[in-house]
Length: 354
Image 1: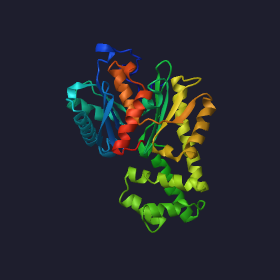
Image 2: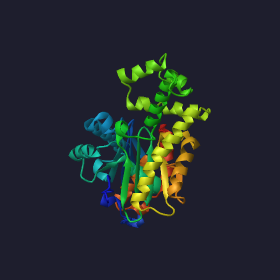
Image 3: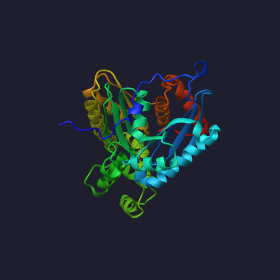
Image 4: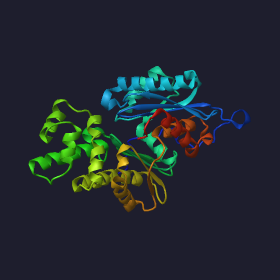
């Protein structure tokens, strides 16, 4: 049975487009904009292709699952307006902005954006931006594991496929949130003696500033803790695992297996074969070899020649690459040129990549 993709790449973002050049070989489009809208923050970047400068704008969560479509849109507009203002231009000078937004229902956000901005503003799911960041918008796979998880890829014939991305209630396997929840469950199992002892118990009570593990369970339900507040505990899961705790290390093995299943589905459904990139994006991969090595091993069982690596460029960079493609000036920008420009402005403003 052939199923249709859950998420397709808009036709305008698929082509290789040589694009058009302006005077003296400079691109006809000058100002591009990409937006990375996540569960915890939103980052907008305006790129001046002529001056090779990047201007940033910041906003709060733009994940409609977490804050609703209207609030998510407000965050997007705040971030984009700030970036445009910093670039010192009018909004109508932008060419083909691409907004990549986290969540299960980005259509609702797209409807709000269309009511406020020109039709040239394109809204896609954040996993599309991650894919573009991971592969340079070429055939391959982008796998997100941050607060949530999601996987998207495009094959050599242009067929796209998404796996995961169902949110923290129905999915997010292998994400920071998933790791944190499983860590809390492990601490509760330790407390009631239905599971092995683990240093996660002490780590959890210290991190959430509660006297006992059972008090943490009460806090989770009574406050309740937000998705982001829970996911933040994954940092401690990594610390405990690096210190040698077998329970915590086992959670990373399980996370790799779960996320690996999604990557495998994307590889199979897109027709990717031989050598292609699988880029890993998100804060959960800061755990390093604990997570990356078992995930790579899982992927290599299906695709031995795949190149699996943590992506070094910020996710907003992929949105700028897609903006360049949409504007018909893809030839004027590539990852090697874009990354140092982004790194410089992110470092200057103290923004950490995820």
